[in-house]
Length: 164
Image (cartoon, rainbow, N blue to C red):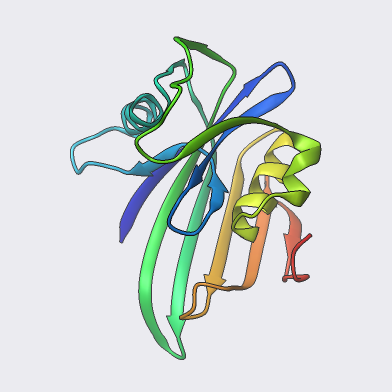
């Protein structure tokens, strides 16, 4: 199982997202963990590498499982640890090695090209306090098929409504 950290960085009512060129989708900064890293270390390293910012005290806000299925066979299994940060040092890079960086308002999330799981999780995180837990299932074309999402032991969303 692959382990990944992402970090939603908030500043003045906006969040920092990264548009990766491979799909043209927007994502929170983050990436694969190194084997020996602690969760916060991985989140801090990935944010710095992609944005130039040093986040201070990132808070773990979500543990999410992403499964890619081809009929009954798992093609991919990924656990994502989602962090949130409200304070940082530094200046956002003019050009990231991973793609285009932009500060986005929460209202703009509905219009961005992005993974529906990321959109759902970010919106849920911004609207709720506490820890998010989720499982997201994709088909072999990497299209979201279904999901379950809860916060503080309370189911907040389930299913899939086709997005926006």
